[in-house]
Length: 250
Length: 253
Image (cartoon, rainbow over all chains, first blue to last red):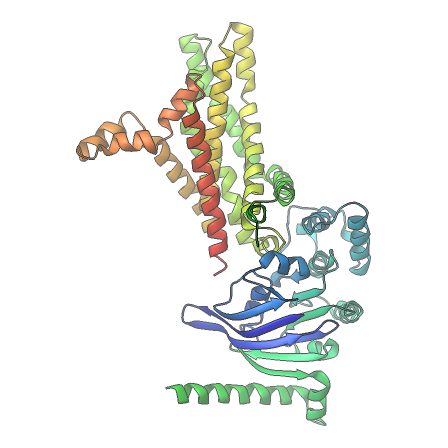
């Protein structure tokens, strides 16, 4: 469903993403973990065709993001970082606009609208302007917009940012319910959140993929140890390998 | 094998973007102020001249517009892409299944709607002239068409500039300066000066004939709807819109 092969993104001399490869299948929830500035958002932006890779190839359901961007975008639901919305639109009009832009109309649009409003619990803010909504609601409006066309691939950039603890738990359950036949990749910098909902964990730091491991295996490996400690070891080992590699090149 | 139709804009997303933009434009207080200021300023300057000359004619009004539109049209276009970039909604829009050129055309269409409303706001002048005398309505219609095309061209220019910056003020000032260059390049005082600077090149005449809006706008104001004028305005507008779409795609790299 998603194939990322040797993908790099350079901004001048800065390697924001450095030769990252992984693949994802339908029905899988993958957590993309890394500190701020690790390259998570850059990689997601390349997957949604917003940025072009400097090198490598990304394909969604066989469609190349560079050669067939429209075909890729039709398959994707995307929640950008910072939940950017059209501030000057009312929530119901915004969702309707997003649905129509996704090619929905008539009964199908109405059906999907009702589903999204119900699933994301947006009834209370439908008549409000987007600019009047709280951070939590804005995030849910963004998720509803990403789901409006029932996409087979869902990419969420820091989806729980701004949600309160109750909303975070509800969101995890919501994400699990969405998984059927859908590939879901979401980024976060909070380990507990990623582990709670994902089948697999991708750890990225300084643009490099340091680990691609099933969450169950990580738990087994950790045993009695703290998961965070195990993860920190992975990150530090990755740093050492990268430094050794650069030393060898020099 | 891809056909030509695969590369042409699809009208559904264009119209959807235009519909959203029209609502956003009419929701903007700056645009309201600019629209009203344009109508009041253009009408009052014309009325001043009308009372002095007493002619039932709108030539003075149309001669005035190349000085007003480069100020007011960038005020419409400045928000089109700069605002999208500032609030980061551009990422949301351009990751929808829509080509950059379709989004550009949608916003351009919405700008044209506002431009038309601004020009329609000056129609009471025409009504007044009809009541007071027997104006040449064909000539007035050609003048309005020329002014609308001039506005469309400046809107294309403004959209392109707006795609280059997230700062609306920078977008407004840059678009206004560039718009005035298109106007001043054909000014009767500027042309001889430029010709004098490089007599072998006849730079002033060259700019007047090929770059400036002056000869085309003058023709429309006299009631002449020329093919060259139509091609000039539509061609320059299309070139800027194309450049705008390229600039948006270039930002992805």
